[in-house]
Amino acid sequence: MTPVASSSGRPARRERLEARITPAQKRLIERAARLRGTSITDFVVMSAQQAATEAIQDFEVLTLRGRDQEIFVNAILNPPEPSAAMKAAAARYKQRMGL
Image 1: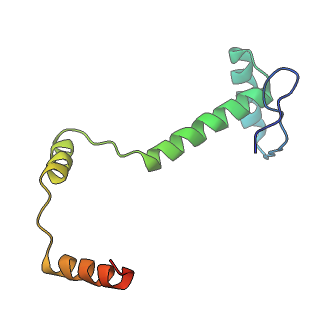
Image 2: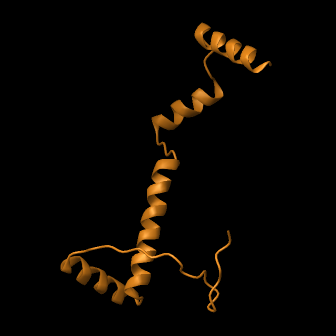
Image 3: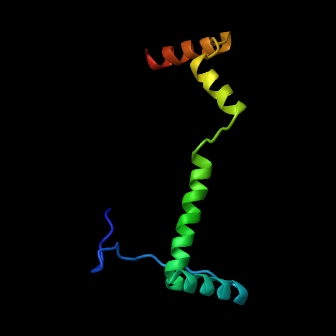
């Protein structure tokens, strides 16, 4: 479903999110929003969206460095021969699927 656009051209906000926070957290968020020149709502929504995007990326993207990159690429380019158990499993699968 495509979000309905408001008169500003942005998608209309149709959902509500509430949170209970401490007075210190509220003061911190208010200060940060003022520094960014945004409303508290816009600041919280943008911050939560950015945190959500980063959290999802952390779980969905594999990042390797150094020796780990070499091991991974080598495994892709030079895969080991299938073991007898893997060959038997493949044969059972093909038989069950009628392949």
